[in-house]
Length: 610
Image (cartoon, rainbow, N blue to C red):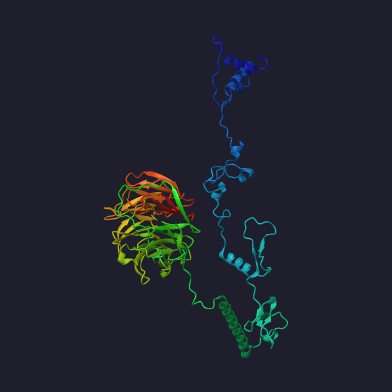
């Protein structure tokens, strides 16, 4: 093999492991690119030439990298389709499938695909197009006048170079630079006769005398229009006036037929008495308490939590928004229903509905007795405030300021029972005089609808709460805020309840963060941070809380129809009763019967608990 290939022989000797053998004469190392001397000298011997060639070839072998860097971009299917949409340039030539493949990655909240974030319009992506104003106006006017225009799209398919309107036939070929043809009037005698003053023109439309009928120059019968005589015009006007008078007379007859014969003698029935007689054998009115006089004075520990359901008053066809005791005796219950009715119920004897008051047209929001119970006020979503006679059921007066009242509060002074204050939807607390049906004062500082108005310190001060999450304290009769109660963590307070009168009186507020908060109802009206009652769900509803007469228990309804009871000292929940099917809106504790509680809800029921 060595004899056949002399170059291998020289290479084997150079890289041989035998150290004893040495080459007889090592040729000098040639520089890269220079020819060996044996090859350069033509007269050298063949053996020396072969030896020099083998050494030169062995030294000029290229270096080989065992692990070269290979660019695999475009070789893998995943990498071939992975294109970054944020890149401004592409260094590869992606395939059509890669360009049309949908975007892959996390989808943002509210989006169905990743392509939605690339669009700047509801229908996709809108790009700006640079267009000459003159060319745009030309195409716009051409389309408006002749019904065709050039297609502004970039990629135009054959046959869609011109767009035409679908409303009228397009006049292809005409431009806005063409000179218009002159128009002339025609004689009116062609359209008007002596017996007919208006004639049907082209298209079926009836044309009056005053209409100018025009034709083009190309028409055969071009003539100047005639003159409409004044008598003809007057004749048409007289006919129109006569038709209008007949129409008014017909409408008046129809209205007269609908109305009753004597509307003045027929009054609206505003109340219905449901008992047999309004007086008993002794001549006493039905609103008087015929039982024993209630005991005055309750011990601090004499009130007990109710345990069971005793009775249900049913009569409202819709939910009950508010209930009130008859003052002092509490032998009657007044209820405000969302069926636009106010009902008064017997509590002691047969427990029936005694009278229904039907003066409102929409749901009744709030009711309140005067100090003696002979009269009461009601406010409704029909924007009216009505002053009622409890015994006869007649409306004494009705007044409104065209805004929805959310509450009605009566002045606590027995000599000022004609003074009420209402929180309205126009961000004002309005003070009314019921005797004159006039507005006495307006307390206007809130930034939202006023929900509650509460008289404090025997009527010397007013406390208002509103949807602006603020509580304002006012001096009675002076529309200047004495104290602002507003914190960033506060929520709106849509219902407020005053505690029983003791040495210190407190005020409960139903906060919209599922809590009942407490303030002092005297002095500086300090916030009682420790007195917080929670556990129930009242968010979104104006649920009125309640006190026990001894001030030991706090109660409130909730959105699930439950009735919750807390201890005033410990702020601990002691009992929960499932009271109503809907929202339990209000609850009141009997002032003399120490374990009796009445609740109402949006299921239309009023329930008694003991």
